[in-house]
Image (cartoon, rainbow, N blue to C red; front, side):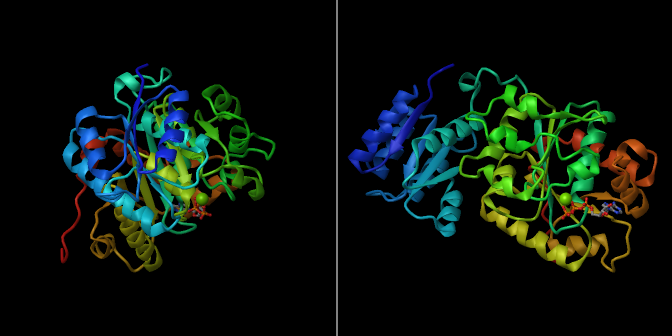
Length: 397
Ligand SMILES: Nc1ncnc2c1ncn2[C@@H]1O[C@H](COP(=O)(O)OP(=O)(O)OP(=O)(O)O)[C@@H](O)[C@H]1O
Ligand SMILES: [Mg+2]
């Protein structure tokens, strides 16, 4: 594996020295710049693999440096940038992300946290030569099911789509319950509280695939599961500071065709960590006003965080239920196409839930079962590059 080159941009010589020492100890090559202009110049010439960028700098500040570097590299490359700030302010964070940063760290930070973030970003943006050895030639696809509102059927769709991807499309699928406090997968899939959960992964000193494998559950339906903890109080062990979710997802995608993650409407750090690791985010909604309001807010927030519109796709669940709002009305209100629809069939859905036998297996022939199969066929055919060009509807259509 080639040595990754890291450019440290900071005007404080002490910080430079400490960071340089830490990074070299870990086997990275280190370049340094003491102001914004020098940073841009060095990056132009040396092409570092990652940039650690302080916000407060002489000449050009960190935001301006990030903007220039992004403008210079064009569409061809993407050097990961970690913005280092003194403030925890969300405004600062959004500004940094808008300027083109991929992650941010708040001072003071622990060296272990810095190294964890660097490794995550290097793995995410790695060109072939820098890839970790364990990475297979083609990593699987990560899809997140995000509920625009509670109770819209996010878990129902995540579970049944995961199963249908395995049974109908023959894909290797792992399903992750990202509702860390109140995950429902044990109920939906008839599993006891004694089964291991994600907490058994994060409690270990280091996370690797062997450990993960010992915690995954192979379910009768054919898919593998990473469950949420049996009770809410242990959920906080899954740390967003250490990016546990994206670390785990990163490992799983090396071994499965699909990593399916079920998350709820909170735009907290943990969910943002999942969303940032996902290739596609399916926003699950029903055609009612509070859902439309939430979907609009979510789309705006994701755009502010610099997330390409194409990575986010709308799924209308219970599409045939009468709500007084048609698909067309909903699309107009959102100025976005609804990409997928899953029909309403309460009896089949609730029986599956009550018996712990997912309808994608027990009632695959029902209208609901077929509707989910149609949905996963479209997902599986989807070319991620095409998804980037998802249409935004012009106003007034
Ligand atoms: N297509 C559907 N047709 C009819 N009923 C459905 C459909 N999808 C889900 N349901 C029902 O809606 C209810 C909520 O489903 P589910 O638990 O999957 O939603 P959720 O969005 O994950 O909820 P939570 O906010 O609790 O996590 C369940 O009773 C389920 O059976
Ligand atoms: Mg749910």
